[in-house]
Amino acid sequence: MINSTQAPLLVFDGGCPFCRHFAELSELRGGIPDLRIRDGRADGALRQRLNDGGWALRDGAVLLVNDQVLHGAAAIQWLCARMSPSAALLRLLAPLFAGPARSRRLYPLLLLARRAALMVRGLPVDPDASTAPR
Image 1 (cartoon, rainbow, N blue to C red):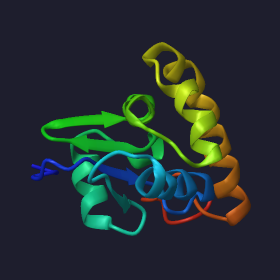
Image 2: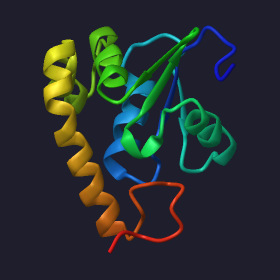
Image 3: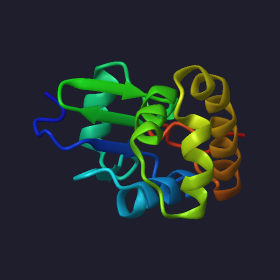
Image 4: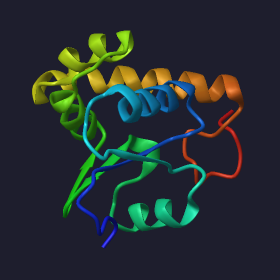
């Protein structure tokens, strides 16, 4: 079992400044009770358990809710559908990603922004890779 508690756990790529900012805002000002966040890039053991389950962090954030694992667009959609955002960024993103179909269509843009941010920082897209992409 990856998440043995009832509180939702968002696992994100801490190497990506966009991901970090979204995760921190979600936790602090998203209005989702008991939401916890964890930097998956920094937590190798958790990342390995997720990889073993088929939920690679390189393909998007992972949200663990009870016995459910949501990955990528589904994770962001779940969060956005439940947010009561006070931060300007969340007020913009929440309605855009609250619906499943729209979230699936727009999520690749978030992955592209993540890839660019990691490239600028010299970090690999895959946290399990040993070198940055060339």
